[in-house]
Length: 322
Picture (cartoon, rainbow, N blue to C red):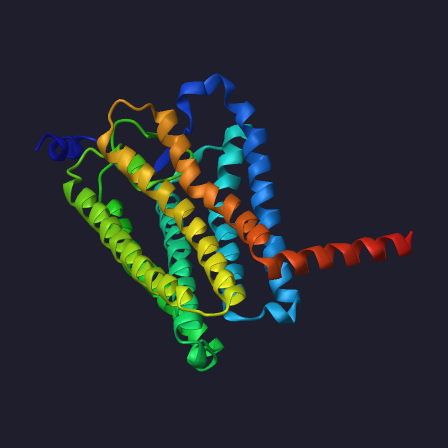
């Protein structure tokens, strides 16, 4: 094959340049401020959720612990991407080794998978709480949460490692510039000069299988939850159950909408610019981390009340000190 023969004449690259948003290259530094503000907001809002859940003993129930775990995932996922991107925009520190690129790629998809895994755990928690309320406290113990979290880690590794391993075996020659702000799978493979058919098949298969399993489980569990909630005779409890389901459904919609839109556009559209691809990638990687703490902070009454209580106490302490 042509790609294979080329790889015998040119050594494979072991260092790359990340060049996000190449269409606005002369104005790239203007992107520093909005992305820096985005980074700060994501870290602050998710940290507030984590701090509130950790400090308030009344929020140590499984549902709030899982919300806190989701925020931890968002912070880790964002920190894996934005600091490197910001340094590249401001100081031109765009170089990354192949090993560094593969490590960043692993964590991009690992934390993305963890995001989905936590949503699955939340669906299971709400299913047991609403459909099997008498057994809830005996099933959803801290031991069970630890086991589910470990299973989520293992699932993420099993799904992602084959993709990363295959990417490490590819020959990269010709251009060494990745037209992306991060080492996404297809962005790196776009520089390959060897056959990447297997990489594409495995990468697409892993994503389709995982998303099909996830969406099927979420649909079945929340379908059962809604049916059980409608049978609750007490109006207050029924409304609370439906409100909780609505909050989780909104978060699920945000996460999977941007994941699907980015994945589909990467594979079916050849006319879309690199900047549009980058923008959609930024949306699917960063918007959930920005939106989810706001959704839970505003729609989850217990968290909202505790947050307001915490900040009001701090204001009182500050006034007394002055």
